[in-house]
Length: 233
Ligand code: ADP
Image (cartoon, rainbow, N blue to C red; front, top):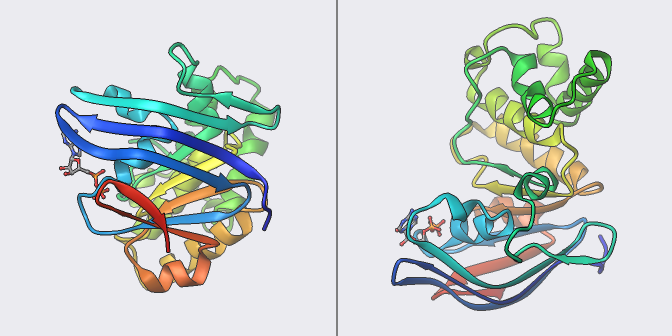
């Protein structure tokens, strides 16, 4: 654990049309830590995650104000400035969703897909990157002999680890996870918790979770989102 700050959030406001969701958020998020966000449904936890990779900009009627600075190892950069390059931002700030969403293709191709999107064409180096990502996601041993098999044939827990591997293949500095274990069995939950605890050595992790026992097990910092405010628990 470190006290170094990775993300600084200042005067952050967020609206869906006239509906105010986040009000004047001031927050620092520590590097190489697991920050868990909890609180009642519908308060804005998913929305908050989307402010960190600007994914909300794809939503009609959504509007955000304020400043988010991230230290991508060269000092703080303001990612909220207009024109900030979103492909690079989303490469460095990866996201995993509640429901596993593998692409309709084979296991290997799923994890290699982001590499293809950024134009990485070297087959050998791509194979090594995919293998490393699958290992980090604790999935390599289970799939190494069937990499061309359709990803939809994997179990729910394996599909979620595949989605984590697909995000890790670009070596993100920040990993956003939106209730990543809520549709999974106990063994899969345990595996994902273990891999997140290892991953925080290389990554700053921000995870929405409803499960207090899970938060107790893995969180370094817990934030509660309620009444449009995020406060430390
Ligand atoms: P949480 O993750 O805490 O459950 P969300 O961030 O999903 O909360 O949603 C916060 C509030 O914003 C909810 O009241 C929800 O109905 C509303 N909301 C979410 N997405 C949209 C959208 N695309 N358009 C309008 N309102 C939305």
